[in-house]
Image (cartoon, rainbow, N blue to C red):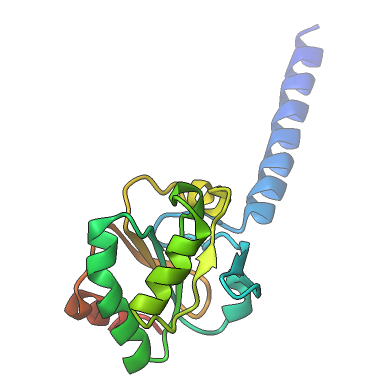
Length: 169
């Protein structure tokens, strides 16, 4: 009887090691912490294009989660636009559209602020939930391999953005 219990226990341990290895391998360390592979997503932009984070593999990306009604978000937008103009950084300024009064507010904001960056619309908060966005603005800097190198809750200045950008490969 003892031999059967030991055999079952050892067999269970072997199965656990194999399953754990498969799950870890499949996971690829995807997450939202520094050092994690940034989760992929697909969102439609204001002009109707579909943009995916994976479209930018091999290039650095900045994700910025924002809304038109958020004063800190509004205050950092000129610096984000300037950063995009001054660098080869791909900026995806993800609007939390579900929190907006209407889509026209977003379009009007883009026009009034002369924004040229890509602005995906998170109409159902799916990407915000995926990235565990609570306070806004929230910004992620992702290197050319898709690894999160930096994130912050709250607004950034142009100088802070440039400092973090300079650390990306």
